Length: 69
Image (cartoon, rainbow, N blue to C red; front, side, top):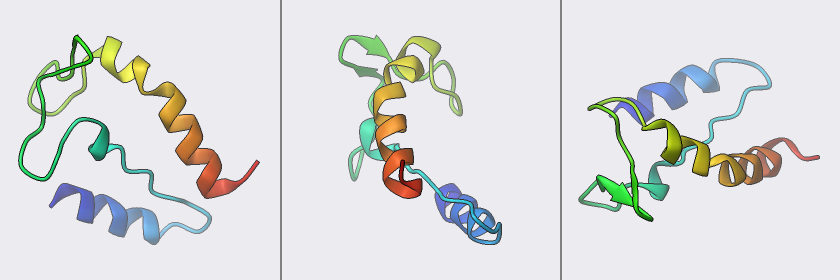
Protein backbone atom coordinates (compact mmCIF):
# COMPACT_ATOMS: atom_id res chain seq x y z
CA UNK A 1 0.00 0.00 0.00
CA UNK A 2 2.71 2.48 0.98
CA UNK A 3 4.82 1.57 -2.03
CA UNK A 4 1.91 2.45 -4.31
CA UNK A 5 1.62 5.88 -2.71
CA UNK A 6 5.38 6.40 -2.97
CA UNK A 7 5.37 5.38 -6.64
CA UNK A 8 2.50 7.76 -7.36
CA UNK A 9 4.37 10.65 -5.77
CA UNK A 10 7.59 9.85 -7.63
CA UNK A 11 5.69 9.50 -10.91
CA UNK A 12 4.45 13.06 -10.46
CA UNK A 13 8.01 14.43 -10.27
CA UNK A 14 9.75 15.06 -13.60
CA UNK A 15 12.97 13.08 -14.09
CA UNK A 16 12.45 11.07 -10.90
CA UNK A 17 12.58 7.28 -10.66
CA UNK A 18 11.31 4.92 -8.01
CA UNK A 19 13.68 2.21 -6.81
CA UNK A 20 11.96 -0.53 -4.82
CA UNK A 21 14.19 -2.76 -2.68
CA UNK A 22 11.37 -4.57 -0.91
CA UNK A 23 12.37 -7.82 -2.58
CA UNK A 24 15.66 -7.71 -0.67
CA UNK A 25 13.91 -8.21 2.68
CA UNK A 26 10.36 -9.38 2.00
CA UNK A 27 8.87 -12.19 -0.02
CA UNK A 28 5.21 -12.37 -1.01
CA UNK A 29 4.08 -13.16 2.54
CA UNK A 30 6.81 -12.22 5.01
CA UNK A 31 9.29 -9.47 5.76
CA UNK A 32 12.24 -11.15 7.43
CA UNK A 33 13.70 -9.91 10.70
CA UNK A 34 17.20 -11.28 10.05
CA UNK A 35 18.84 -11.40 6.63
CA UNK A 36 22.34 -12.73 6.09
CA UNK A 37 22.84 -12.68 9.85
CA UNK A 38 21.94 -8.99 10.13
CA UNK A 39 18.96 -7.50 11.92
CA UNK A 40 16.91 -6.04 9.07
CA UNK A 41 14.61 -3.65 10.94
CA UNK A 42 15.26 -1.35 13.89
CA UNK A 43 11.53 -0.76 14.32
CA UNK A 44 8.29 -1.23 12.40
CA UNK A 45 9.15 1.37 9.75
CA UNK A 46 12.95 1.67 9.56
CA UNK A 47 15.77 -0.55 8.40
CA UNK A 48 18.60 -1.22 10.82
CA UNK A 49 21.72 0.70 9.83
CA UNK A 50 24.07 -2.28 9.24
CA UNK A 51 21.47 -3.97 7.03
CA UNK A 52 20.69 -0.73 5.18
CA UNK A 53 24.40 -0.21 4.55
CA UNK A 54 24.65 -3.74 3.15
CA UNK A 55 22.08 -2.75 0.50
CA UNK A 56 24.35 -0.07 -0.98
CA UNK A 57 25.64 -2.17 -3.90
CA UNK A 58 22.09 -3.15 -4.84
CA UNK A 59 20.88 0.45 -4.53
CA UNK A 60 23.70 1.59 -6.79
CA UNK A 61 22.96 -1.12 -9.35
CA UNK A 62 19.25 -0.33 -9.46
CA UNK A 63 19.72 3.43 -9.60
CA UNK A 64 22.21 3.10 -12.44
CA UNK A 65 19.80 0.83 -14.30
CA UNK A 66 17.12 3.53 -13.97
CA UNK A 67 19.17 6.58 -14.88
CA UNK A 68 22.03 5.13 -16.85
CA UNK A 69 25.64 5.92 -16.32
